[in-house]
Amino acid sequence: MAIKVDLLPTERKKYGFDIVIAIIVMLIAASVVVYWYIGEHFKQEVSKKSASLAAIEDEIKKEKAGLPEIEQLKKKNRELEQQIKTVKTLRYDPVRYSNLLDEISYLLPNNMWVNNVTIDPTKNTMTLTGVAVEQPGVRPLESISGFMKSVTSTKSQYFKTASISSTTRGTTTVGKSPYTSYGWTIEMTYDPNAAESGTSAEAEKAPGNPKNDSSGHGRS
Image 1 (tube, one colour):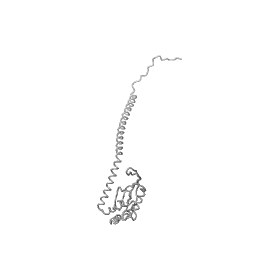
Image 2 (cartoon, rainbow, N blue to C red; image 1 turned 45 degrees about the vertical axis):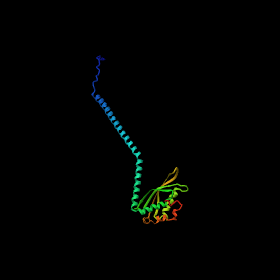
Image 3 (cartoon, rainbow, N blue to C red; image 1 turned 30 degrees about the vertical axis):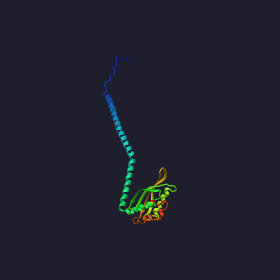
Image 4 (cartoon, rainbow, N blue to C red; image 1 turned 30 degrees about the horizontal axis):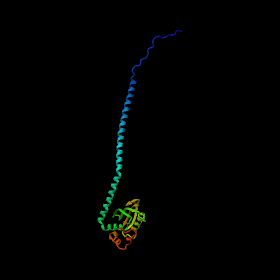
């Protein structure tokens, strides 16, 4: 048996330039560049949006800071409008509404004050807002209740009904001393014909009228 042995040197395989690998490498590099560019673009957009959001939040804070002042101005405007409305109403019917206001001044206890008056002649209503302050031996709530009873009793020929819509407890300083007080809003209905006659207001001023005693009524 014969064995053949190849003693010729073996030729090594040479690797040349592979275009497929080159294309893949280029694609990978291009993808990296594109993703980096997109990332930077989004970073810039996020920065711009964040800056815009911060500016908007600053504006919101400024607006919120100005809201209390705006609300106070609106409240003052509403009060002025109500006062103007009342004055215009008085101008057209001075006797009737003068009698109504005169009646209120006599019926109010000494520890109650009126801050605002609104008259609606279409509904024959008068709305009062004010404050009742505690005095020695006199409680604000009792004064408010007594005033409403006086309005709806035979002491007044002008007013027919009275209803209280709100009370708010607080503190009022008189001089240097704090006193418990209650803010109140009372709506009353009146008889326009009786208010025009002036009978009750004249009776209020008559000597010996029981309202002009020392019970706290009859304040001028």
